[in-house]
Image (cartoon, rainbow, N blue to C red; front, side, top):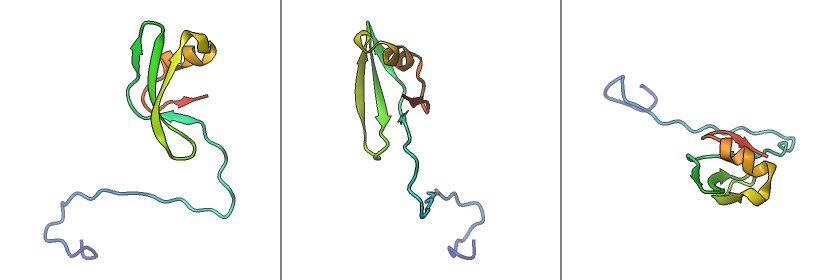
Length: 80
């Protein structure tokens, strides 16, 4: 409270964290960042990619095991 010169002690603050290392970070799988949208034989997932970009990706029955994993994926899950 003293640092931010606040008037009241219960003000909500949002936090962001930064992790730093001298070693390169290990490769991370894509992560689901929104509820999946399913259809007949297809699933659309919004994914956060390892490079930090985000976007929708379509998976169909032709994708085999990846499609099966995408169908069961939930918000916050890793994919691949």
